[in-house]
Length: 273
Image (cartoon, rainbow, N blue to C red):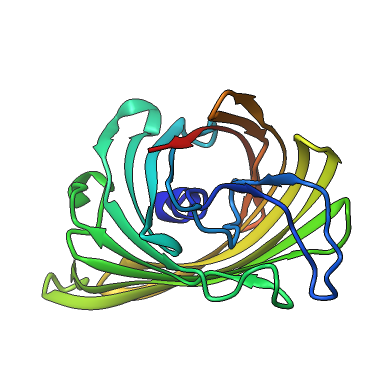
């Protein structure tokens, strides 16, 4: 299970806004917040900050718990956004536990709802704050790129698509002979989601992604494939200028034909600053 995939795909861009298609027809207001495993292409509005907590738990084959704390800030306007994510992991029933690699993120609002689709490419730096010997980090400065695209298809349906890559250069490893090596590890992710607007402030989500995860084994880079499918629900509550969005997902992870079910909890607080 790769925490960068699960946390990094669940940390971005809440806004509640009036969507408009290219023909000029306005849709009613809807939650345009974070999906859980698919990134939505909506930057923070000017003057609005968001605090996001995510918790992922898988009980088998080992008890793995991953928590992420994210803050998102607009930079001068909605066109630019900065954020950071601090992950904490407890793996193998707590045998391995600690802070993972921190992400520093920049997103550019390339297009908005006036275009055919909304797009907001993201660039992230992974800082080597996690201990690699405990499987909490990579010990190198990494790079992550992701392109989220979002489209309001109708009054009741919004769709999102993602394509991303994570690059970890110069990761130390050891060949079978014991000789040291350095390798660049590249991982890929593609995915999409469909969101049903059951009510104005209640959404049902169906998300899925495919992760081609690179790992260093005996001095060579090998890739494994993980499929994640997750149904979920989220709601929004407004208390004055504060918006609270809780959410629940049930992710199913499929690796080498073995399926495990987990739980995903989401909670965000959004307010002016």
